[in-house]
Length: 443
Image (cartoon, rainbow, N blue to C red; front, side, top):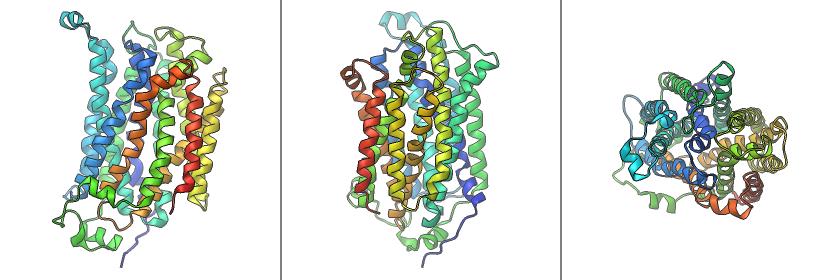
């Protein structure tokens, strides 16, 4: 018989608080990667290719973290060791990535015709996203491990709230440091100090938040986990002689895994286009420039942080509304349609302040994407000893659409007249398709 302990709000908050710091790192990456690589000399038609790297690493790393942590029970916990290792690596990489443009090109690099800064930035991005994925996944798994079905929506909505609060800080750091006097421009090919110091401070907050959750949360031991989920302690992965591979697990995955995954495909492709083309879109529509070396383009880059912060505020507010919906599917559909309206409106906006309304609406879709898929899936997986493995595999429904969207971004933008603002209409269409697919989900 399963023993369903109800957690206090404070316990749920502590369980998720480290996500605040992890999301600061993710927000800095999301808002500044296109800006950094454009500064280093990337062509707008190539920008989407740089965005293949983060989801590709997620597809590789998160299933492995899920599988390994399912079988890990040690003095430090089950999921927490991976959380700590990922955070430490992320901090180290965050100190290096924004300095890519400061590399002096050696004669060897020049002779080969290679951009040392670009290559350094690429490898730093790979390691940064790998480490963020390692640190991020344990939070989703710990909620699945320790929270009852009745509290899942609250727990994941709290995670969504803290996630967007972290995004708010990460997005605003560059414009804040510009406001207090740090340079927002730099020599050609060099990342401005306002961005460099944003990464430094974000790294410090990340490790402090992760350490808070690491020391405040006590994970269930194998016996407690078995009692909580009503399963045989000997059936758990670390006690079982069987070690099903990912293919076998996918073959036995509940239908919810696949139907929610279909919705995820359209949603994450839409947001990949937002992260890739927002800087260029608003620089063109609002500032009237496409020159990445200009002061206006860098000002638009700062404003990307502001409107992404507005999106985070919209997400935080909508995360408070989501638990009030009696039907999760209705909440999901409504949220995605609101987000679609926000995406479509960006194409028409030429005033930087009107963009606030657009990104508040986009925030509703983002809040739902962070909370509702995991609520639906973990409830469907209740009692499974392979929760971590399935959540890691489910991350492929986040990563694969980003890879597809990134790989085809150059083709799609060519089809819409090489217009970065028009990519927001494409993104809006994706969210509408996602909202239609919500009807296929069976609880």
